[in-house]
Amino acid sequence: MSAAAARAKGRLIAVDGLDAAAVHAAAKAALVSPSRGGISRWDASGVFQDLAVAGAGAGAPSARTLLLLYAADLAFRLRWQIRPALAEGRTVIAAPYVATAVAFGRAAGLPRTWLATLFAFAPQPNGRRFAHPARGANALAARDGFVGFGCERMARVDGPAQGLLIEKTAAYLRGADRLRPRR
Amino acid sequence: MRDSAAVLRREARRHFTDPSRPRGLLVAFEGPDGSGKTTQRKLFKTWLESEGYDVVTTKWNASELIKPIIKSRKTVRALGPEEYSLLHAADFRHRVEQVILPALWGGKLVIADRFLFTGLARDVARGLDLDWVLRLYEPLLWPDLVFYFAVSPVTSGKRVTATRTPNFYEAGQDVTDVDDPVESYQRFVRRVIREYESLALIFNFIRVDAEQTIGEQHRQIRDLFLKGRQRPWSDWNAGAVAEWLAITGGARR
Image (cartoon, rainbow over all chains, first blue to last red; front, side, top):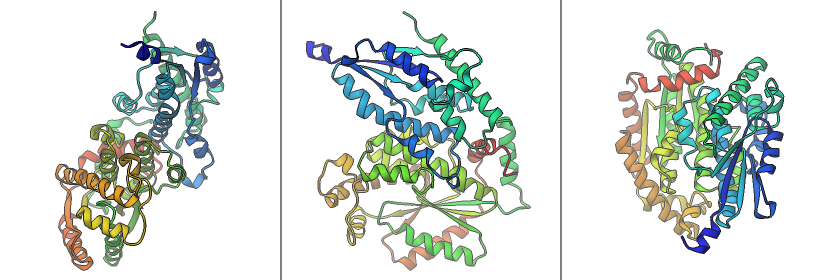
């Protein structure tokens, strides 16, 4: 590898979790030098902001539809934020990245293979972090993140079902954290 | 998703093969721009209604939820091939769940002016992998009949550019790097037609020669529909129906 190529090799760190505030705090902590990197957040493309203002007559999206939109947003983030920064040799903290969406999809009953294929375009991160809410605080913590957004808008997911979906997502995220390679 | 997938699959089979109720039929019209699909779809719908069918039409990129999102991003030319593909797959999924499956469950005849094959042909022409794109559309819902309006790139180009200039994405300018939209369209539609021709073979489309007169095509479609409408329900669709039954919580039953 040439010196220029080595210098240009950035690092991608994924920070996943239910709690948007905790994910953001963990992302800031993971960013050692803000001048040499940045944080890429969900909905950088504004897709979910646009979805939030759609009238009730447009129909509630399913988990599958929400995940296709999450993947579209991630493709936007990769094109405009993550890949250009990596090419300049910077560190990018993707918060959240793929694991949050996969956990949500698994909790909603979607096949693991479909989820893996959906996000196959996303590069493997160089490192992974998880930010978990305190036990029993999942529902409150999820409020401002993708999972909370999805649960609120999904077809026929009422209060108790929302709670169950959030708990299941949290369990999948804890499972993914246990499986991640440790240094 | 309270019911198990196997139970819901059985329910789907039972519903769509019950001879005591009218079975919903899904007919897709596919082909490149300028192949005359929309004209034929309108004539076909009028004829079906005169024959007593309860007809529902669904068009590509037309869901109330996702269409505005796609439209605003196309206007500012902000979509890369993956985003373009994923947003259209989201729009399709939402229409399957909100329009197509409810109508089929209710025994109606659904005419789809473009179906998932449009996504496959355009996305692969944009350089994406066919297998990846196809899997975005899972669980797959197969139409009972697919009419493919076969037309040459030259005819497509003449028809599309006769009255207007193709827009940025229609012309494939996001991938051809050609500044002139008409020239870009001519190049891009060749790729799209090549993909359609492959899909027509793989998925056994019913080919309609779209270079014929409007009347000849319409008569051919009527004849082919009358021959094909008795096809048995495809069991491949059980998964798609079962997932829809699960997310609607039995509200349609």
